[in-house]
Length: 530
Image (cartoon, helix red, strand yellow):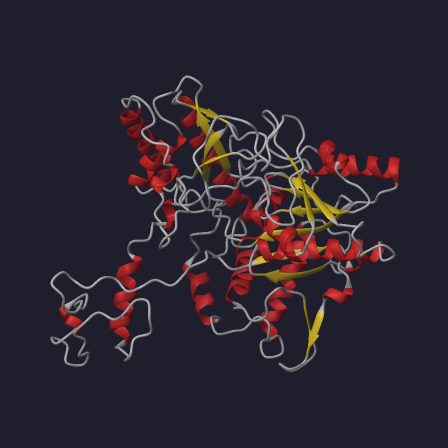
């Protein structure tokens, strides 16, 4: 969630007096309302107003939001069938935590866990342990906590102590939730940097960063930066070799926020899941390629031994004895119901058809970008239905940030951002193709890119280093703005307890390579909506 701060009321109209209501129909012309001035926006109004009035005031302001169907920055589902929306509306008052009051909703959650355990090839799906979450961010936090607690139990004779500081190994391309985990729970983040045309974790380098204090290694099935899969099987093989040499037994968590709901249907021969004995846990976002509106994720462990019992709490004050493993307590059950509906509605063949359609659209749009000769593809959308591209080497009149701004003028949200260490020199655009981004919309997008290039090719050089000009959100008094609607992936260096491990080129204090001066950027991630 974005951090907000209070703000003073908008200034009074010129000449003094009161700000009038949005529409006179809500004032004297409507005897039932009696509203003669607009309500305050940053303090609680003194009096109530008619529900129709409150609705219209909020509705009118929300018209200035972008069109979610044209948002090619977000991985989050922006379209569901009307029947799913009806089910969610019917469950909007159900509290997911209250399993005694809503036993059938709890049963649907249990069925979803069982279906996912089977989909991800758990050795014994009936023995797998899992739960729903508010998204992959919470799921990753829970998985990280389980890894840390298992490591602490194995090292009870020397932890806690200053000499035994737990660490977590992962690629610099991880989603920001992993940096949060390391900071919140005092774990050292050992990040494998990018090198050359490798934009994610290198298995051998990851293994070399492991030691007796490593709680686990995170593999990403579908990178936020470019949509590519990390080689999970190769990672496990490197850790197997490490164990043979040193005796260190390091578990793997697979962050399948997007890919765990794509690979099982489109890449069935790819071995990345519980078929690998070293994989202890997997998470996914139901609200990404699980095809559900925002607000649901899933965390699964291969068996009870992978989830320490002391992390599971039991409560009885809602009626009955209920185990719970979550960072929050109350949350709506509607998204869990919608997830079960989607799994039931589509089945394996339906999911395969939906995800293949998204991948086909991604491949066609990527090919169209390559044919323009102004761009160079980094990925092609043949893993996640996501691809990243940058300007060609001979393009000097504009950059990716100019393209992002021009597309925003046509209504498209396409993020432009720089890569983390050691590829801070590389700036890219990324397109996320989801269910609902049809062939027709893809044609319109391609046409708008071509029209934008006609103008950009005529300008003498990129107009300004102010990369934030394209952002639609400007927090009061703040300057955290990024091209593409704030959908900019991270700088790779975590804060606080997280420490940047680097290999290769020299770097100055602060973790960035010595390079040409760059405009100051805030630490905003892509809209991964975890």
